[in-house]
Image (cartoon, rainbow, N blue to C red; front, side, top):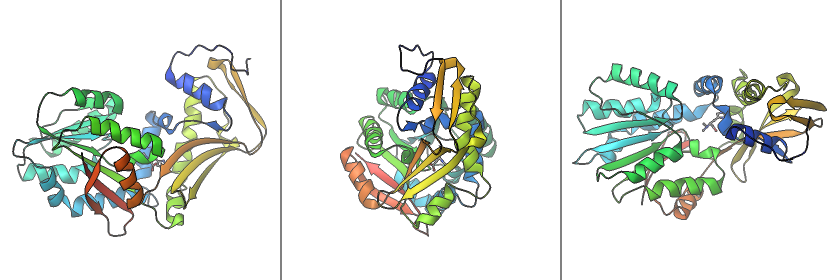
Length: 323
Ligand code: AVI
């Protein structure tokens, strides 16, 4: 067994990143690896948890301000509604219903990394709205933006990113993500994006530490994924799910904390990792925002906030950005 970073060969980015993260100090794993089939299902469950207010708040925004939002998006020549990370599309459905019922010309273009999610979404939406003009695309944000940049049509495009997905990026990467989007936007295009807001720290902490333990299972699922894909032997019972929230920075961080001295073998990587008792693996950030932070991020990325919509508790804000 090798424990040092000697010349390693990796077959996949997953292997490379898991190797790098678990041999670093302090240890880390990117939350993008949460989303295998089980991870997708657990996240669907999280969105229905009473403590996970984000989904309900954003639904309220879309439901309350549907007509206003539809008006903002509309264009005489019709428009393309590109949704990044569409998932099951539950929240978008209210808006789609309004657009279809009011015969506003548009094409819905949901994009997701998971073909499974897209198939389910297509089936569900075409059942509900047979007249919906819909083109699904499977891919990463990066691939999607590349295609968007290459488009030749002058048709207005509205890019939608719901659910505060941007919160899983640190500020540097969030600015890069926003800049990448801006580079693909024409003058009449809009970006509609959800940002979870700073609020009572206990409300935030509970959202990442639900009483049914679904978020714990979601966090630990990444170890299960490593066990399966990399022939590893993580004992999930010997790690504790530990979310934190820092009200100064607005950053929620999730960790997996080793409850004892232990060694874990990742046979496919020919690697043995040692954990000291109470050593952590940082697995996720879920950034919380206020208007100042969002204005700053937008400015850094060359964007401008034109309108914003908030739920009745001021927990969540959807911002509309233009170039
Ligand atoms: C997808 N993302 C915005 C979720 C969040 O709130 O950071 C993922 C999640 N992690 C734990 N619970 C939900």
